[in-house]
Length: 366
Image 1 (tube, one colour):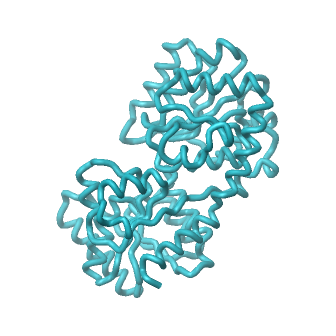
Image 2: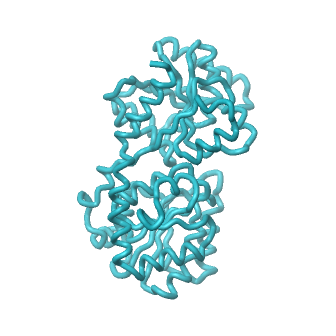
Image 3: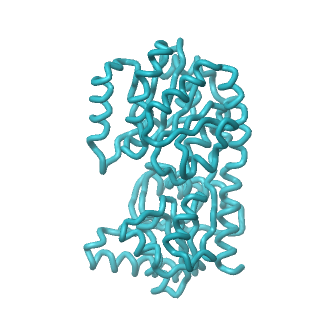
């Protein structure tokens, strides 16, 4: 695992796998390439953990040392298969597998794309590749047409117990607790402040929404992303340019995400080429009417006009129309929210752990 802290869905998937998969047919040992709070969280579950700093690719000595150290742990612990969590980890996992004489598997939690280094790493020796969406699976088939038998689709899952509206306070009570307006609808987005996550698209949609529903409020929950430090400032400036004042709030990084989402009337997922969209499942589990982009993982989760509304990425006008449709037709919104909650049950963390373990055993031939 290349990261030592939870920054997004990929890290949450690993946490869920360790939480739900410990009673299954696989015994886990996790090698982190960074130290951090996630290491301690996994260790506290009773899972054996190691920290092997990876250094930088261009530091050849550190790179080779890291591979040797991983291979040493694999041999010493008699590990049967190495799973690389994300493409960057596969550069280490595949080579450590060759050095230790063990097979490796790539768990690709990102969208496969044309970046040359990703494509190169994806082609390193492995027993197979696990991918988390049908869209990602089709991309892999286009990139590697002769290797389709090695691919396995494993959908992630959400913690349906944690995102159970019956176990949380009422939206009104949580708005008061979180400092959100008690009166008027609250539209929310949860995601790191990265441009591809589309927070700016939602902000640009708000003037049209406020024309018809002036009592509405938008809240964006998510922390800054180190590689894009200026995006948060861009959003602040955009809010000022559009004269949105306190109608759009940037809540920053928050840990009590179920409470924030429970406080929302509508949940928006505005990402571009989202590989899966764990936040979508979490919002649906809470019974929230959803608006999401019409490609990638969201289009596999949501059937339009059945579980929610899909709009093109970057189309703030279409997003505004979808939001106004919910706000102008509470009965329609309630029907979509109820169907969404039912659909979310297909994506539990227990099913994810079961399917992930089964895919590993299948690829390993036992």
